[in-house]
Length: 131
Image (cartoon, rainbow, N blue to C red; front, side, top):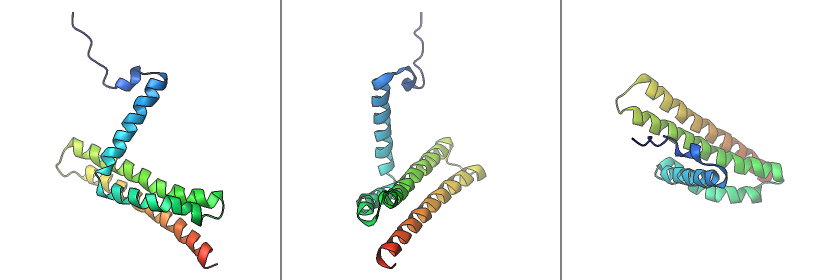
């Protein structure tokens, strides 16, 4: 009698703290994989400077949250863009219009997140030092 094949998603059989623990490990593996991407590495290093700076620059909890959150948002969007690119590359290396569109829109999402963060930081710096 043959044994049943293991489930494709081993997380489905886990419950409680075991599920949380393994999900945390998977997430850390994702961050480690993203560190191999130059763009994510640059954004993470910048975040190490900007997030603490947000606590100094922000005049109240809302400004601080907007400043720090906008930086974290850029990193989140970069992670999603990297995931899209990896999935497209997994499908195949040949050029395809839909693959290009997926990669281009992921890149556009990163650009918009960077513009939002830049606008929030510019406004905060303006109000802190000019107004």
